[in-house]
Image 1 (cartoon, one colour):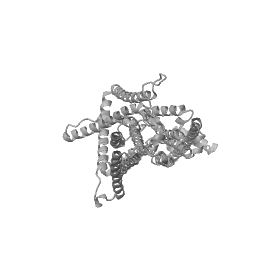
Image 2 (spheres, helix red, strand yellow):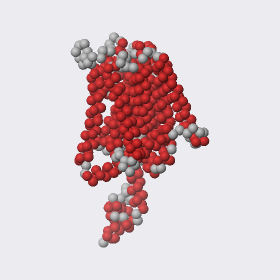
Image 3 (cartoon, helix red, strand yellow):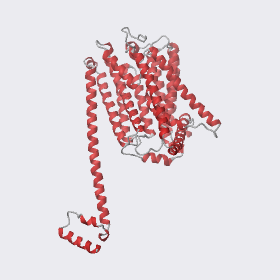
Image 4 (cartoon, helix red, strand yellow):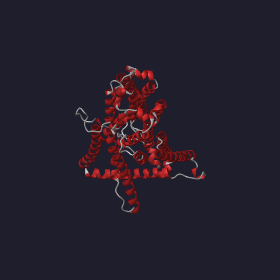
Length: 526
């Protein structure tokens, strides 16, 4: 691919444009977040601001305690059988994944030294999948033992029983909704990319649709499909960010241990949570995409794949060095980011969009498994990849329905719609990618029409169900209120009832009865 800033016709290089959009988006988000918090601090009353700082400090301390508990639970694995009691399954699975992790690491090093491309690719997939499985197993054990680790059973009892029907329109909630929309588009891009790659539109007579589709997907999801020149820039930028985060966390931890009486104030950590949720998938998926690209070098998938999606084929890219750094950066980044976004477990304010940490952990981990499935599984196993994606997305739908990870019922409902739309697109991809004859007769318009039609039907169905449920709830509420009024009316003696209660008698009373009651009331009032 030509890495010059301009094409032969004088137009700007799409890769350069996409790179600029990528970094400008990151800068705009960071600056916008800083401006928002500064403005809110200036317009808030000083006394209210002081109370908010006290509350924030308490919440951040709780976050740090949870983060420390998660890291402690991850690294402390018992060796003796008796010490594993009563969590034998979790500890044995953990050691099994550690064995797979160690084995895949050794095989990857040997394969890179001996230039065994296919072996390196399989061992890379094994390494990433084993590390994810290990962290998920330890995190699941953490949630089982959380009450004993944090000594705050009452706090988590309140979290487990809190639920709100609606949310208020505020800047914070709007940001949360935008994060959900971006997450939906990011997850939707996986099956769409697989479809674009499957039908191989770039090699057809009219390949512009494929290039345009990949360009648009790269912009809206921040999964930049860059050429090798800009891949190097983005790669080192991301590795530097993860290294800086690790260095800052380690330095703060060491300093606070060294001087516990004068610790560093960490109230500002709360402000990083929206950024961590927003950049969670783009950062980690970029690293998985880098591992996928590097592990494909020298294999059949690389020679037959779309060059626009393979960004690491450059003489300056040292495959062993870049692959080793990719796996190391992904391991550290995945562990830190996942533990960080799942450690904020404060009791929500009514009307605020907030999530239970175990729900965030499950959905984030499933999202990463989905990215591993689409990016690291070989194209020769495309049918297995499609089936695995259906299983993962279906698990996300079922979990969102059964566990209700958000404290706001409406958010859970519409998030389920989003997962169902992704499931529908993945189902289309599964059906078409396993039928070569069908792929030869399809085009972008037909596939996009089928996807849009299914999503529209799902949207209409969910709206109808929502309207029906709302009317049912309203009728049930009115019935309960009427029953309560009747019960209270029957409990009040007739002599103590106010006059307006008698002046509107039920229709079941006869006219004679009403006259007698009204006469009695008049005498009593005189």
